[in-house]
Amino acid sequence: MSACRDEDPRIHGIKTKIRVVPNFPKPGIMFQDITTLLLDPKAFKDTIDLFVERYKGKNISVVAGVEARGFIFGPPIALAIGAKFVPLRKPRKLPGQVISEEYILEYGRDCLEMHVGAVEPGERALVVDDLIATGGTLCAAMNLLECVGAEVVECACLIELPELKGRGRLKGKPLYVLVEYQ
Image (cartoon, rainbow, N blue to C red; front, side):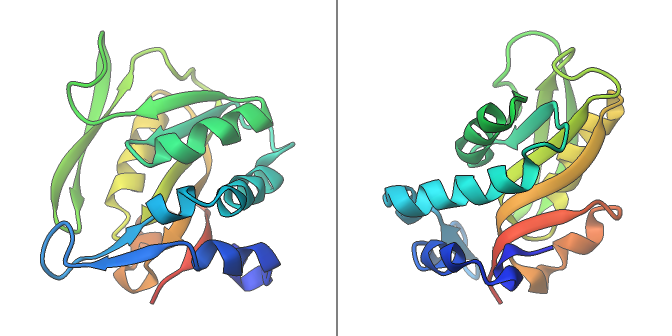
């Protein structure tokens, strides 16, 4: 599902604040830069508000944010809906015992880690990131959560790049996005 199809007037303001940077971080990549959105308090607040409106009252107990930009959107969503925030980090960034999941990006390979015990079996989880491209990162996040017995309710991203078909890799899990770029 996409909020941009719902014609919410806030979506246009959000979309105009996202800058596209060609050939970053590698040639051929059109990087969706959200730092320009973060500089606009109204656009940033509208972004958080749209996610909170969707997830309030859905009995979500865990908001799992993918490093690094999922850390920007995840905590305020978690606070607003009364859930805990669980960071999903790059390798060797979390102290203590972790579980990990490797995945393939559109421009390389990576890994996500989560603290052992951060999520309990049966908890209802929302995965938050800034963007879905090929879907590898969100799949790794879902695998980590499901490995410990959590129920992934939905994935939420600010931006989707539909031509990269990442949505199709999510094993049928719902995906909610605010903005699509062709």
